[in-house]
Image (cartoon, rainbow, N blue to C red; front, side):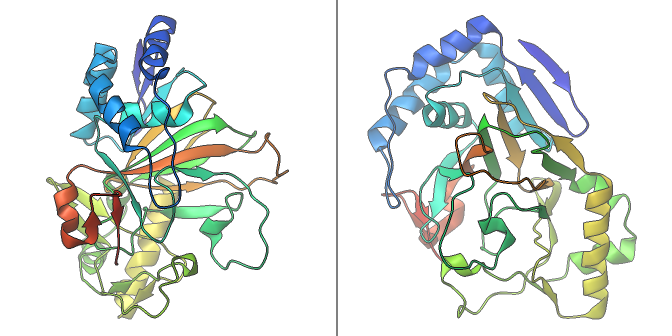
Length: 304
């Protein structure tokens, strides 16, 4: 197993023998899901197998969970049993969940032809998507986002930016503005929540002694001019410290959703099996943080 520290993350490259061991653990597990539920039997089997993963991989996953790394990139994973692998490797990081209005527990991010119009950049998975955090418009966003790469295209970059590095480029006054609960981040229309009264929140807080970011610039509203200027300065700072990763098939990227923002480069879709395809799952380290918004029977949250 090869291990390397990257700019604001860490790389773990799995050896052929460990790759085979991981595949053996999930070969007998058959995960399936619908828009509202998933195979709990398969998830339970995966949880029983997680301690049997290669020890060096376990150690790196657990170290990352409590570290100040923005991301962990795991390469050379088996290129089959995709969703089982995704759930197995992330089971040491947190609990998988989905928003009740968004669909499946594991989302397949790939270009799909659709009828009608969708106004959000995020909906079209081949568009450029500026640096953002995941689900910033809900009360308790995910702690981590995991992306397993089934296929990629040339130049299909995933962008990552460290909030700690970005803050070094901001003034103390700008940072204080970002900490004020004066921002509204609109809920995307595909949630069907356009009439919900949203709470004003800060873009910057703290989590476990580290900075905690929530941001999405499209539609962002600030109560004050100073707040708006601080948000713009933050976005510029995130762009300045941006890193680019071109995910390879059989790689897994786990992103700390508090310590980093992420985005993507655009590409021209062909709507066939040669397009970029990433499978994504949200993770929370403690489902009790959701309170009454969490339904344990289907691993879904509701509300904003």
